Amino acid sequence: MARKTPKGKSASFMMFNVTYEDGMVTSNRKVSIELLDQSFGDSIDALARTAIEDQDNEIAQRSGQRRAKIVSIKRA
View 1 (cartoon, helix red, strand yellow):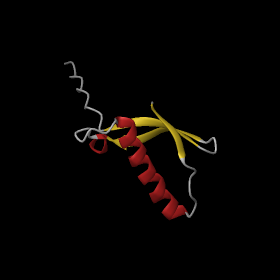
View 2 (view 1 turned 30 degrees about the vertical axis):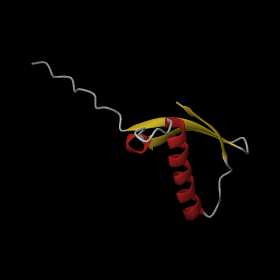
View 3 (view 1 turned 120 degrees about the vertical axis):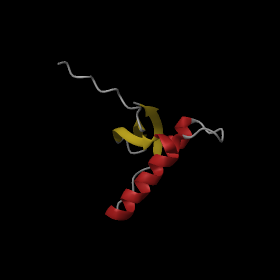
């Protein structure tokens, strides 16, 4: 008897590549789809930048080391 193939779930996050002022590049940064709600007119890039900055701030609080400012964000 053949197995049914599972149906794909919709993605619950988007991936972004981030470039920082110091030349550092991080690939495939995850941002929840819920944080990318455009109902208030903001662009996805602006919403992603805010979410990634929040992630960076949380990491900085834990590690004690700040990241450089974000230069650009592109969807991966």
